[in-house]
Length: 132
Image (cartoon, rainbow, N blue to C red; front, side, top):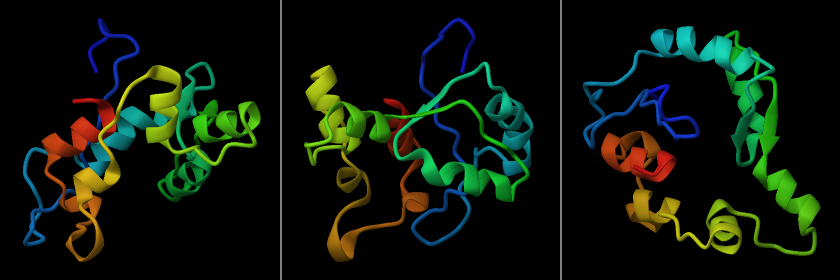
């Protein structure tokens, strides 16, 4: 993400495969991503905002990376409106930002036609994860 665009979202494509299961070109190698993201994720002065973040530290610990300074929008939604069942990113974006998101189902399909996120084209995955 360019430094001249603070607050811009980014998507880091790792482990995408095509419909046949072949690795897609033009991705970030996981070791290269960890070299850049590891220190950022471990820096307590950088707030990491995400939704349903409870499992991310466990995943990153597998790679030897500690995540500190996490803000979880799902937990904030629970505290602010504990009586509401609408705590998904789609619901929260619509309610608080008047923004309709691309849904996970729109990106991956549903039922028997659902594909794993790793098989979603990188452009579409970026659109879903980082707003294009």
